[in-house]
Image (tube, rainbow, N blue to C red; front, side, top):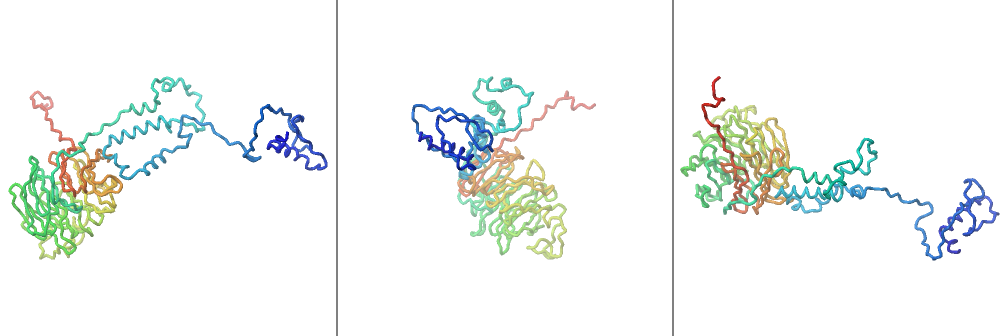
Length: 552
């Protein structure tokens, strides 16, 4: 009996019984034994308290009683009844939190490595969705914590044709629907170049443009102080020209759209025009750009017979190669640092095209030279390093930019006008910005912003498909030195090409529009088949019986 007397249960009984005798200390406390009759409690205010008669099941087998770990006033822990088939509610899983934690635990390069194969990336996403649906249950399909009662008009569980009881497949209905849904096909893109050419001396400079493909099929490449032409049918090339000064080198090349005329800019600020058909020098603008801050002509662009050059002297100058004068007929000054890129929207001349310019000052300007007045000769008060005439105002068209965009946070070099949609411009900037932005130059607004995670070196639109090519360099978040193909307007990645070991500074498109050539600091030229071929125009049969051609 001593074990029950000294047990926790016995102490609680004595404490409960003794609490009713506080007002009668002279009364002898009743001893509780196993044979003592227990009566129910009449009321909390009664002076004599008894317990309900209880039958204690005492076995003959002695057992060791453990001391309770909870206090007298403790309550039982509430365990809710949960759907064991839904692990999301059972364990409080958060899909977004899990995805973000997994993504942050991976290395930056591994997080973006799947960009090289979008088809594999989509397959991995489908696999993860199937695992979530089968192992953890669908968070959308299960509502075990919902407070709403099922509707009276809802059919019973076994009357549902999609219920697992009627299915032969072990997979859930959601999983079967997910697997069976049609998926859009990815366009197949060759992931390896079909030709690689050595280009010793190809500059690894972000501020140069030394590769351009002519409409006639000639590929021009600047290697140090030489310019070479490659026809494509042979692996070798022919030298076109060499700089006159041994300390000079070529920094920019651009073909004329209509004729095999090549313009070349040098580091010393000279501008040369060559006829590739005769390999002769047509014009040479000596000291076309000259200033104490720098002379390098890093970018040039054609529109009809007008050649536009941008330099380190922060000036944009326009030259008419038909004019015998050695001076530019117009110049624009708005950038506060080196002009990194200039690009005309079309080949119809300054009266029908817009000019985009990007600078090392992180600014993008749109110029409208339509209706502009040509500047007079230098003896009429013209200053070579100011915006316009000394005695003129800012009201003349083409002197001030039409739009000024300041969203970029690094040097703006990559510029490309959409050949399929007018007034759509794509721009890309350096590593500190690492973004591609799309602009509507008709309204002066930004349409889209794509974070690439790496330096954007160059941009190029396809003429056969509505896709954009971007070449990249340094990166701390993605695989560096990539070539990416973007689908417009969704800007989803079609393919990512990896092969260059250094920054991919240059890109150009062949006349057929199905092949691109890229060049970089690894001193190689790589040729890729990335775009579909141009679709031939099928003409209808000319027949005298064609009712559409009969005169009614």
